[in-house]
Length: 241
Image (cartoon, rainbow, N blue to C red; front, side):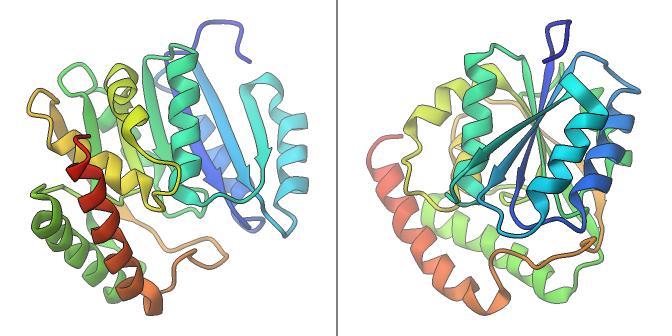
């Protein structure tokens, strides 16, 4: 781990991203270190079955203590994000940056989130330009409507893998998220939105094409997942979270 106490934990879940993970780690490390050197870069390998682990091992040799890798059995993207959030809370690291490992998150926008951190508790990248196709744009719009109808929460972009969050605020939310909530990062956005004391911000970003690999949830399963999400959200909110 870094020799100075980190003020930022970068949390990046990885699943079968051997084609992209090296480039993503290196480009993000370089960009973030332009703004703060007090960082810890955490990659959580969520049961990858391709050559991702070998790539990560070589990256650790290159970056040393600047990169921490955790291997686990597959539990899904949302729960893997939660694991990173919990580690930030346990280690008392003030801020968490969540990104994905497929290359769609462009680091050039990071400084805009970072310079707004004192004014906001959670800052989302708002995808104003997307290179991954109109179906994904439509899915994001439909998700926003589903969350508003099912949970009464109007979220900027609840599933965006590009967000900077104050860890002290996450510490109040994480314990309420059950281990079987498959889109836990979406549930996190909903619960944060429903707390009036939480200060929200947004930064317009461009969202790139993937460097490689395939999305975890194909478009064909979005309807099925939306129904499951509504059920889980109603249970969560009905339970007083």
